[in-house]
Image (cartoon, rainbow, N blue to C red; front, side, top):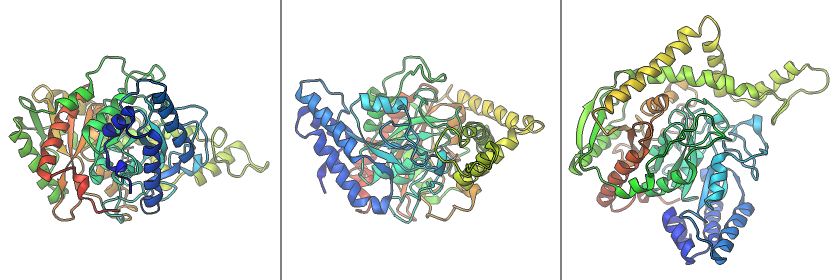
Length: 497
Ligand code: GLN
């Protein structure tokens, strides 16, 4: 096994820029790692070895020609299969898009290419990003590198597993209700949901458009910040993209101190339903922050209790509208088009065969919630709850710089345990959903291993809208303090694959 795969993205970028190693060597080392572990992990739906080596060779050629390379040029990345890519299939984890080749690159894809990042392949996900375990993928589950019998989180489970298994130093994800932070937490890595509108949705296959947010995964906070900065920022192709200057998250990660900051512990997140080992590690993180000079106070956000039910009306409503475009005419699968059936019949047969059970459940739920007569009672009420949640955040951020909570109530659960119990699955996002509904920034960093199962626990750090830098500043401080206590990254304690 090449030692290159254990390096951080920042280290790889500087080794490549100085010419100590070539981008092709770095890419090959990761392709070799993928070949060695993929049969057990199944993080990827598609590996593009040839195109990756060609992209890497192009970076090496630019270097040889004397071009100044950016900090991530030549660094490999695993890309969630929900972003369009012209040179690789894009399935969103669904049978309905099997084999689809998009005619254009997502803005995130284009910016990865412009930064010189080498796209190794496309990662597995719950179908259309609906789920918390990657078990809803039409192409089989991904396995958690800490324990292959357990889930790697979801929906970005291929993204988290690829980074935790050293198949890639970086990956992209999307977070609609927790799909970056929850997989990061349960695989012992770093995951960030930027402020909504801070990263572009153009070319991201839509699940719930008012919530969907692309963000980075990495093995440390600085790498996540570098990737965040590489693909975020205003995009005229996305009508909800924010056109405002934002503080540098890379600078904030470098700052890495909490002295003088006030940190609020969300009172509503804890107690019944939380695993004791998760609460114990969270309590240690609180004490650590105090020891680093932060003032820690308890904050009540009463409306957060209603975030989960509000989300499960809003997200399915938006999904039922967004997924109407899969009509057997424009994309991918077409079933029963034998000349005897009407377009409507073909559409119904295609959608019946092409969508999995969770996607169908949500389309039905959303269609019902939006139907006249029920709209005000369900969708309308959920939107009001959404406003109350934003107000809870606004009130809290009058007094505190960041809010913290466990990222998830439990550690990674066994594959199969919640597969037939949607309500149990939905609980995985209890702590992450408020930040999606309010659109503010939130980061998950490792905070230790639960005593009962030895599995990773995540600390969630939430900051105001456009306060992404605060997440990185606090996250980097916590990471540095924990790593000196642990004698290295938490991930170094994972069993070897
Ligand atoms: N697990 C949540 C859901 O199933 C969130 C998914 C996501 O963030 N994409 O909707």
